[in-house]
Image (cartoon, rainbow, N blue to C red; front, top):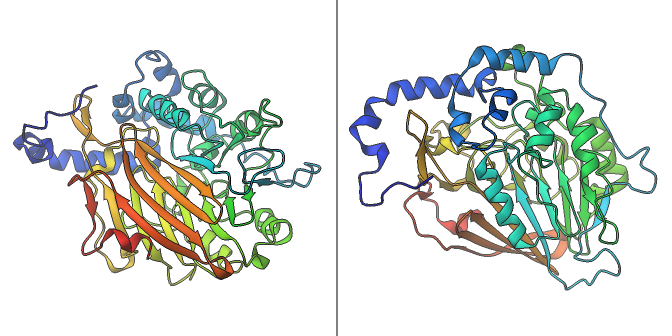
Length: 437
């Protein structure tokens, strides 16, 4: 694919684009209903596996998709796994570059990618970018498309079409709604056994549960499962929105194993699939309300789900009261067609948006849909300092630096935008410093 000619009128300003506006709006409303969110079955995509075109995700064949969806949803959820039968493995791992005799000052690189499991050429490109980062750990923030079935997991995560990059120390994957559309079976029985920590440089030993923690003297990174309770009864879940709450056994693990409520020295970073809040869509506050009982200070929270890159300043919703610096990284593998979205203006949506990406990378499909840039983030831990690097497939976009202060308080040291582009939008009167202040 080639990008748009910079010397011609941006497509969104052309007569053709404006004329298509109403039809495009109706199309997006339709596609954002669960039944047509990803509108072609895996068998259809397999026939074009050598092409893996982003436009495949922009087509609507709703009867085929409804059948694929209902067939995948048959029977109940797969059993929720925890660490009670995992022996000495209790889900807490060293946040270190080396598994034996870790050196505290040695940098640790952790790459985060959200909504990557699409099998597209764009996903493959992002995987190659992550590999060049040479991360010690890689973490998928969830969503294997279309319904997280076994064939889709093997194709879109484990090398059938694209291969998820595993760090030198290992890899983890969070649970999400698309994994649960197929009841979570393939996620728990096929994907997790292929991941986990590497022992002595060998193959990963398997991720034992859908949640985990990475820990050193200064930092505590917690991977959460917001996916297990993110689906309900087929069709009805579109009317009665599931809460994406944390499982009771995950909360028990946080209390009794991690002892989160007693930790007063580490900076806390949360990872999940679903967003706590958003200025574009509805948020999922239940998990934050559960965590507020265990945390007494602001945290960094990285999530996916929305197919965009966005940075938020410190914000707490009235119901949860958990203060969070939000980071949306849902732009890992799908065609990013949400660049046309504008932040919502209603009072309840004013949640501290600072910067979002609406750059047009190219146009795809017969409808000439504008799509944006895929990307990811790499976290670099060095002692009590953290640097976060936000990248697309071509460039480093933004870097931010944090330190851990007394009582585990996060201190925003600096933030810098390295790509000056009108498509990287500062919202309203926000300045970049609001993202760390």
